[in-house]
Length: 278
Image (tube, rainbow, N blue to C red; front, side, top):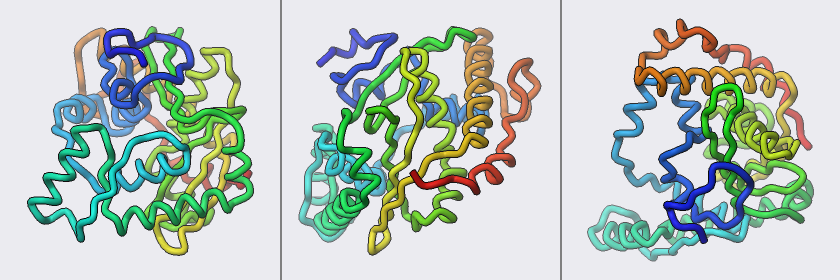
């Protein structure tokens, strides 16, 4: 495992500790880039300064990822909720040890979600070969920006496991893709992979937290990917400009920067309507 000081600046890596990956100060992730281009450079800067607070939904998602992908530390805690002092202390101890804390009744749900994923033929096939939690870095040649990404599962596809509080039927997942910028993330990862010599497309495995925890497997159509690639290009240009000039304007001001322009989110909804199963 690489120490923090030895983080790479290029390549595909299977031995990077997740907290180390997220703490990399030298590169920008797709999550940060989405904030930058869709909410504004000022929002990106404000987010960097925010103190992260615990969200139980993130732990459930992390545990589902651990159960499905076979990597990741978690700790099942036998409390009714997180409202008592003892439960909060146990939760905080787990977090300090880089383990995702999860209540027992939520863990039962996570197990049911795992079972649903592997009962889905297309999902099981996607996960039958490949590697989990693959970190990647590359420098965008047009802007000089160092990009990073962490694929849930990498084989001949970039497989992205998504947990959702909604249904995962095509209509509902269409809105989830749009709301959370999943296609932007897919375009970001595909760009890093291409810069490392891998032409890999994306598939989403989506599993619902709602009973009966249905699973859907989807691929984005070319329309939304084309738009997302343009938005990735805008985000890289904007980040390069803001970094060079140490200026972090509002979103409306950022649209006036040459080479950036307005990310056309309205187009996404039309394109996402044709998200298709694998």
